Length: 145
Image (cartoon, rainbow, N blue to C red):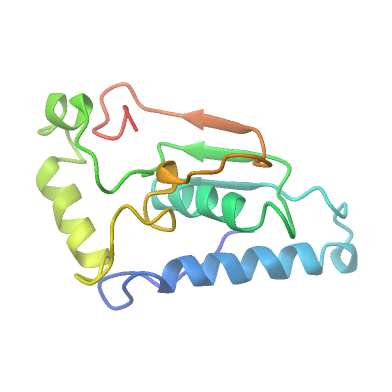
């Protein structure tokens, strides 16, 4: 299932995340109705979809846990500056200027970027999370995340 979630800048955090969480909950609750195996849901996404997938895995791990996470070059830390952010700051198509622009469009000024619902890598409790397959790109600003 692919989720047509609300996009920034028209819909800032947490709108897109809420859409993805609602879609995941609906899919789990309706799996049997559509012939899908019950209790075997996974989450996957690339870029912001990987970001949302990581958060969904954390948020639902105690109630409707996914069995796997597939995170494809996910954005998981909106706070830290890593070596790859400097090494590939001018790499096409995701430059430092582009990343900064996207962050400003997505995050309201009033939110804390260290919140695990924004930077899922900063969660304090990793117990109960589904195994994760993480794909990264060799010349990506997000490589170190």
